[in-house]
Image 1: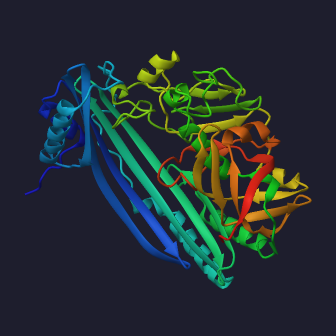
Image 2: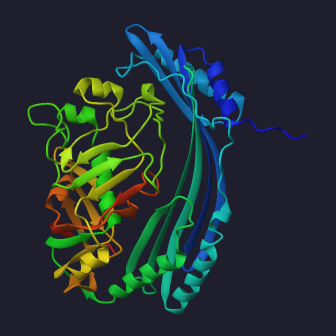
Image 3: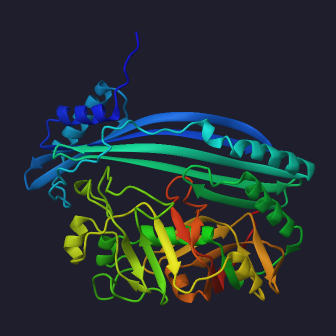
Length: 465
């Protein structure tokens, strides 16, 4: 006898019907992912995974206000969902009043609410995998080793509430990353990128980029620490801009704890924080970087509120023509700052008004400098200035008279992304980019230009490869 699968919509409805709290929100994420992994010019693993994850947020009236309880877990049956609901209801009743309490968003339904979840499978690599095999054979013949990973995931989110919300969103997310080494393991190069469906990913071009960069590294040029005219490719700019975005919480800024805080109190909204022509924004409908058009929050913190679940999202300008125009605002923090409600959106675009050309054009116009292809292990040193530190790896290349002439040693660097947005001397056109530090697991939807920094701070020499 065939057992019918419980649909995500049924899991949502069961959660809402089971809750005995005053209000309830149920978020079901139905995900499938397909991956390939390779090492030493050989495919090592591949697989397809499925997961149904449920978050239940319960709301209970307590002395002094409304308390919340949020519980998450894997759940594919109504019994499993009921257990999550029971735990969330109990947590809400035992909780303290939530300071971000607000009226829940109500009575909005996605036209495709009743549609089944979308999925992916290993067939997403039908065009990519054979070309990757060709790249393995070429690398073996030319004494190179390729290592890498590709992953494609499709998550369908169903968000329902006791106030009548029934929202659905499908999010495809993919990325590729490839590291190349010579057979003596003395040289290393990396490339990577993001994609929605792998139809735009060329395995041959990926392997050719790694080959070119390993070739650049045949000559070693040792350099001391110092400030260098440095080209940051879009991937490295994405690394830094994501930190600038994640650190843009309005409440923290209002309380004087971030680079976006105004001396004397309040936020710097309206102040100049970047060079003229610089714009930083998020837009759920941005072509190629499409993301959820409504808030999905499983827990409350400085930048998210469970009370905001279902709020509609639209293009939000964070920096416009060099001026700070928005920070990450929940309805609660917006009440504190007196600014519009501007929740976090799951993509980020940096544009420079007079940016033009490509990174190759930028290299050709550099008399002497560095091409810094990879940032790594990025950590915040000082939130007041957003000073970050990190390492370089897998390729710091030396540019002389418009050509790459070799690879330098690695460095530890210290820089603030906000400072860089004031100090850059040139920018290219913005293109889809992929942060090596944050793109794999956290934030892969970015578009950024390459930036040339005339005095990038390489604070010390690193021994990393």
